[in-house]
Structures are given as C-alpha cells and as structure tokens.
Image 1 (cartoon, rainbow, N blue to C red):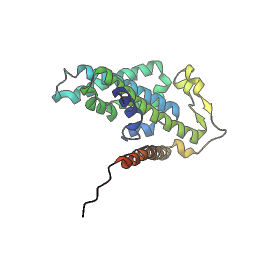
Image 2 (cartoon, helix red, strand yellow):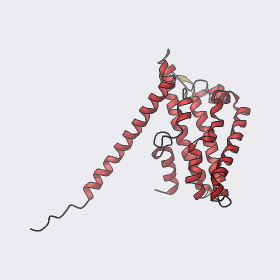
Image 3 (cartoon, rainbow, N blue to C red):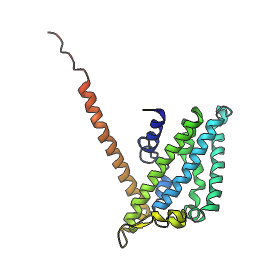
Image 4 (cartoon, rainbow, N blue to C red):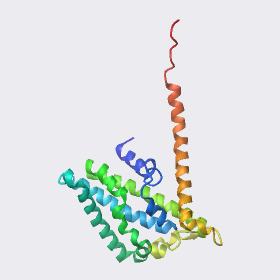
Length: 229
C-alpha cells in the first residue's frame, strides 16, 4: 500500500478519531442531534486541520522544541478565528446553531495531536493529506451520528440544510418516515447510545476483517518438528 493510500485509510477508517481513538467526543456528542450540524462542524474542523498541518509542516524548521506547543496553539487559534469569522459572515445560521463549539475547535486534541505527531515530521503535501484524511474521518463520524439520531428522533434527514448550509444543499433534505420518532435519540442520552453502538459496530467489523488474515497466517506457519526419541 502506498504512503498516500495508507494515510487516507488510516484517517478515514482504521484510526478514525471518534470510533478508534475516541477523541473529540465533546463535539461529537453535543452537535450531532442532526446530520446538518454534524456535517457543518466536521467541515469547519477539517478546514482548520488541513491549514494547521500545512503551516506547522512549513514552519517546522523555524520552530524550536522549547516553544513548539505554544507555537502550534497560536497557529491553531489564529486559523480557528478566521474560520469563525468566515462562518459568521457567510454561514450565519449555521454559526448561530454551532455557537461556542466553533471557538472550542482550538482545544480539540485532534488538531494539536496531528500537528505534534505528524505535521512537524513530514512534508507539506503529506501533512495536508493527513489533515484531509483525519478531517474526513471526523466529518464522516459526526455526520453518521447526526443522521442516525435525526432519523430515529424526528424521522428526517439533513433537516434545515438549505438554511444552515445554503440553498444548494436543499437537495439533501428528506423525510424518511411520517410522524415523529423517539425523543430520546435527539437528547444527550441518545448521543451516548448511538456513539456506543457505532464504536461496537466498527470493532466488530475490524475483528471480522482481521480473523481471515489470522487464519491464513496460521495455515502458512511452519509446523513444529517432533523431537527424535
């Protein structure tokens, strides 16, 4: 597997920030009462992640070890401020819905962790790809959680997309079934339930994929030779 493909698979699935690393759970639980909010939060985080990875990689030769963490935080905080102002200007309704969770991207351990573990050791291109992969995995997790909670709680999918994300996204809006669903799904308890079920499902899928490889390896392993009597 090529390095680029490995980075993409690692970020989106194998080392998914929510389902595998179990990081950034605060926004994952707080803003996923609907798929639209999950998608918006994921895209904002992904934009900051890609830009911060590129800047850290570009400046890694100028940042000394003694000040690297404050420097990384300063870079991330600057980018989050830009994203916050941009969303307030062009996606004002989404900005109002997400509220405090946009500035809180600064303390998202995913972004600082990728800057520390990957971006400061690799090229700008690979760092941008890592930010894209990790951001896409985070966006996928939030959108899936939001979709399941919204379908179970209100019977809709991507409700309010035309208002929050722009008129072009109105095509995503749909009603899955008539009537209301289970209110608990859009409450905090529903977030914990859906998150636990999705983590369990991913682990079951990973174990199922790993078992054929283990069996194949055991079949090809050399058999022990009996000691001569």
